[in-house]
Length: 359
Image 1: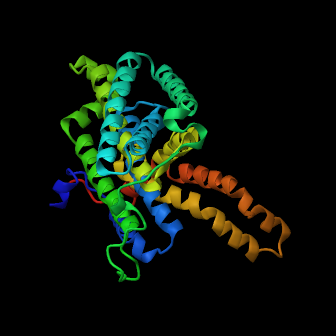
Image 2: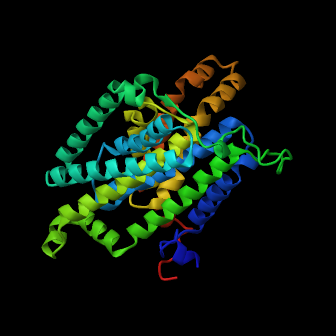
């Protein structure tokens, strides 16, 4: 049953299975075991990034395509929900219209980019996507009447998804069941469904062809596969999943702006998470997104505690100053690449806890 649910792509490592179970249970129970707005925001961000990074891994890890336009499709999803909800008012119809319109726009753009750009060498394709993403971000900032410009758009959701909506005055395990809790579990369910769909795609005959193209595109073309068609389809699918991740972001934040969903920093984060988790392994998106966002969210707090604890040692306390958290995040990234060159998932599958594929 579980093997069928995971499309036969089991973790193949006891340690990895334990880690994935810990992450899934932690995210499922986050509102109850990690009380507080910050913890819930971090958990929601992890869910959104699991979908976003897994969709990018379909491109980079499974097809071997380097694209810098992934945040553009992420932003289209977020802007679709934001613009529709602003113009049409809060309601399920606005959410539906926004998501469908965003998916259609992403479908057309990704198809055009794929058909016109995937015939060139990989480096030129990467440059083209970088230029398109930068142009779209500039356009989103300048079309202020539609997108809110630099200020972005704040909007309202259906009442049942708002924090003010209470299902009951009594608490459930110490937590008041309100619209915010419902929104979190909407994100959780959406992430599970989208992740399982991506697993099904990469383990289908279509996914096997993508991996063959990644390994040797000349050989794949020689045996009859039209690599431009398969690469374009991979580009379109990755864009559609990124669009849905952007829609989830907008629903959670009830806000969207150019810096929130189109920033190049998000693209860098996606690349780092794919490398940390392991390219070509969708489970890497789960492990990488969780560890990276936890470090990004709590490393500064931990360094503040460490700096206060070592206050009597001047040099050490200065090195551990919370202002230097980006430096330490960079060092952690270098160490993770050095010790886990195939990513966390790749390393765990090669380790002692690995389960033979014949089992």
